[in-house]
Length: 414
Image 1 (cartoon, rainbow, N blue to C red):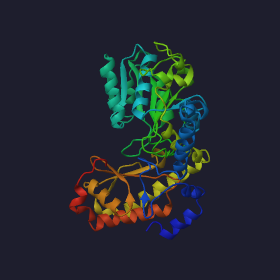
Image 2: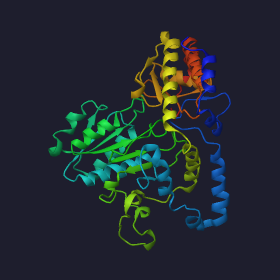
Image 3: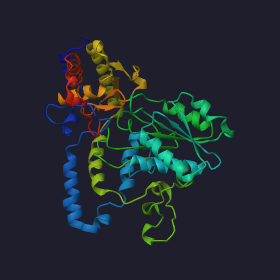
Image 4: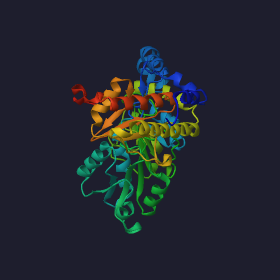
């Protein structure tokens, strides 16, 4: 084979990130390649939650809003997320969900371009991105969604520069199905040269490699994938400083008011990034997320990216070598510069194949109609895990374990 398991064990021994694995909870006998869907829990998360419940909530009751920093969590946590996406202090807030963040970003962008009535959206965007934009258009009226496929046809869709009709463009930096990655700097420059505003969805890139959103107008993303914030952990929104006081978004909630405890009958936006908060922060969810961010503050993202490239490249090589006769086709880019930290393959019977694989301890996930996804979180995935996952996948295909009828029964979450 391309590489032996002993070689992979040697790579793990030399891995500069190897000590981080001990900071996560991973069930015995599980190879967890779903960090692109839900990250593994940091061991410190349980203690962080217990501290908030037992010391802050139980000990201080409502006083925790003042003495434990609860009220300011969207901003203080945003400042911790900011370095992971190439942003600075006062440029990111955390709260609500990615869906809500999209409404905030798109509605704010439309407000900044009142004479333009077109929103460009990628057909490959995660469905919630499109659904929220569709809902906005339905609610606001007199707007059009113009679809592109990735960046194919983007220049044509943008139209005639200063005389164009596009207000904003919403794209995912990494395709959730294939793991393919856009050239964010180049695309942002093209969009802005056409007089439109650029909004990036970072759900599959934040925590996977170095991200630089400083040229972008807006960015949104979740914290429960590579950032390990826990199921349903709050999302973030980045707003370029030049836009923060120049626009308002549609969701004018109490938390974003200039003086929330004045209890004024009318909305008056706060200055700066806080106007992009909406509602009371979910304090318990923030506790788990901040436990993970304690880890991320010690991570060298360039080292993280180097390991990500090595892991994904190894998996492609091994899977193609071992599974060549069994109908597996690479859906991700072979060029690591065009790939996030995910590898996807297609197979005509992808769903039962994935179910059979999970039953044998290798956890990936499935995306309709035929995509098997494998996410590689470099903080806790080892090279030996990659080797074992590829060998197990080959065994499932060769022995046709996936043909068992029970694997064809669709679960609610795939």
